[in-house]
Length: 366
Image 1 (tube, rainbow, N blue to C red):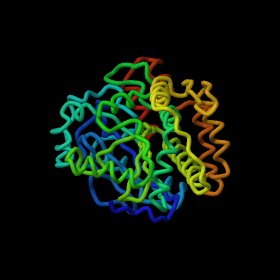
Image 2: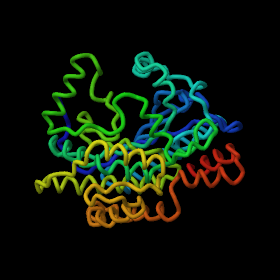
Image 3: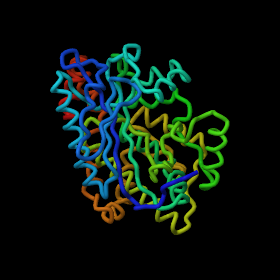
Image 4: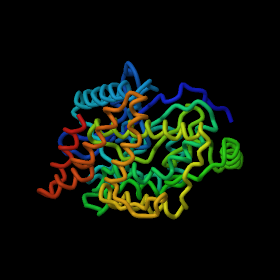
């Protein structure tokens, strides 16, 4: 398998899936074609599976500050294009009251093929996530880092939880996106790969047999991305506030640096049992910042806030080396003021007004 794990190490790219909204009804609207104009100066605006979904993606950036600036510009461009046509954009893990039955699939053979092969499971995937790509310098390093990120995925899900409502109802979950997306095959917690050769063999077995076209049909929470030369973290809900997107990206980047240095020193990564990681993922999606997760190293349950602050302190020297110490510090703001899910709950419970909630999401996204 060809790959581009040849550096530069620690470049960062951020992708966000945004909602395209009608300015009056605040419902989703199938208008992606009208949003695809001239290419932005840097980064991309592109379609996703459904015509009511817009994806913005930064270019591979040298640091978090550059990626953050580019992301802000892309959000502004998407907002302005939408408003010029009487539309709006918003960022959230789910739309609070939209129905998947009302959405159209984009005119693209890859996505049409997904609907043909997966049926209802693909159609009901009306959720919005953020992805972070981090550049790697060699394939074995990329596999080690992807494996090493597995125990941290529940914490990232809990911090980024931003989808407490679905189809007009509070679901009781802080991230409804997690179980909705879980209906697809090849998602959620990834397998642990022994090394680069193991990854190649397992992907080749699936693609040569016709089970999947290529590795990009693996939609796990974290995956090596050989074509781009990155490790891609896909576990998190789209963030309404762009500063939360940037803070979470700084956390991911600093964590990748820690794991890379452990790889270079020959440290054996933590490998908790599958059932513990799966249960932690569920607890993170269910309770968000209030989740009590099992810390496999100590064997005890710990609160997400405590675990996040401990990890932030551990990563501070790595963030300093990567010039993202300030952005990592914003994790404290997320912990102190609450994440997107807690904010959505508070706004909705005041008046039980779904449109008031979506209007706030639009304002905060912009």
